[in-house]
Image (cartoon, rainbow, N blue to C red; front, side, top):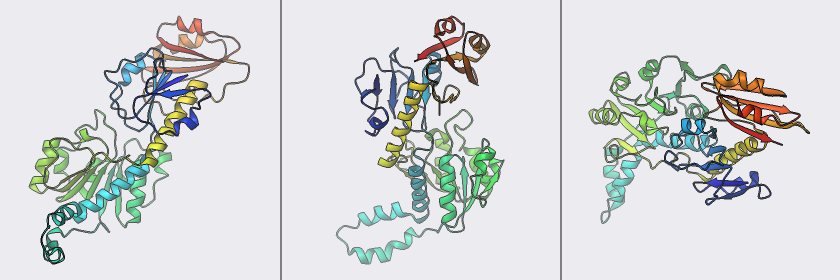
Amino acid sequence: MEILKLNAISPLVGDILTADNYTISDTASAPVAILVRSANMHEYALPESVIAVARAGAGVNNIPLDKMAECGVCVFNTPGANANAVKELVIGALIIASRKIVRGINWVQSLGGEDVAKAVEKGKKAFVGQEILGKTLGIVGLGAIGRLVSDAALALGMNVVGYDPYLSPALSAKLDSRVKTVSDLGALYAVSDYITLHVPSTPQTKGCINKDSISGMKDGVVIINCARGDLFVDDDVIEAVKSGKIDRVVTDLPNNKLIGVDGIITIPHLGASTPEAEDNCAVMAAKELKDYIEQGIVVNSVNFPCLNPGAKPAGKVRITALTKTDALPEALKAVNGESKSATRGDYAYIVADCDEDCSSALEKVKGVIKVRVIK
C-alpha cells in the first residue's frame, strides 16, 4: 500500500509502516493515506484512494476537516508528541522576556571598533530585567503542553494559576497540587505577572487577547504565545505594548504587523522544531495510520469519533463504516455481526466483526459515507 507524504517526515515512520506492507513516498499516485506536517490541504486535490490523513503535529488548521469528513477520510493529529519541545521554548521565552536578553545581545553586536568590555560595563544598566522567582504565571489551557509548563514553572519558583474549561477530573488529578485552577479567565488575568497561551484556534479562542481582555490584566504583564497566531488581535496587542500596559510579548507566530515593534519579540515558529519532537510526531502519526488501515482503530481523530474495538478476531471479517449520526440506527441494522459504535457531533463510526461480508448492505443505507472491509 502506498503512503503519500506532503512534507519531509522523519524516517522513523518506516519502522512502523514497514516496507513489507507499505511504500512511503512524495510521489504516490494512489495512496491509501497521507502524512502531512504544514502543507496546506485546503485546495489540495484529494485522491479518491485516500481513507486517512495523519498530521504530524497537534494543529490541523491546514486541513479542511469538514471536507475530509464528507469524503469519509479520517483525520488524525498527534497531541502531546511535541509537548516537551514547546514547553522548553516557553521557558526560554519567560527568561528572554524578563531579562531583556535579545535587546542586550543586539546592542553588544553593534559595538564593533569600541572597547567592548568597557562599553558593556557602562551600558548594561539599560538592560536591567527582573527575576521570575516568586512571580505568578497564568496558563491558559492545561493540556499536555500546559501541564508540562506548569511543572517547569513551579520548579523555577513561580506561582502558577491555570484556566481550562475542558479540564477533566482525570487530567486535573495530574496537575501538581500547587497549581491553582480558576473557572473565570478574568480571575487569571487579574493576578498574573506572566500569561502563556496553550489553546487551539477555535471560534471561541480567536482574538481572545484583545482590548477588553488586556484591560483586565495587570499593568506591565508579559504575554507568551507559542500556540496560534490568531489568538491575538494584533492592533490591540501592539497598542497595549506601546502604552506600557503590556511590558513585553514573546510570540512564536510572527506576522507582518508584529515584527519590528519595540517590546514584541518574534521567534520564527520554533516550538516543535527539534529532531526529537519531529520524530515523536511522525511515529505517533504512523501508528495511528497503521492501526486504522489494518484494524479500523480510531485514536486521536479530529473529525470522526474515536473507537478502539481491539484486534480483529481470527476468522472474522471486520467491516467499518463512517456515517452521519442520524444514519447510525439503520446502519447498525444492516450489520450481521457483533458491532461497536461511537458518535461525535454529526458523525458516527461503526466497527463490526462478522462471519461474512455485509458491506454491500451497509453501503445502501442513506447517510453512510464510507464502508471498508478488513479481512
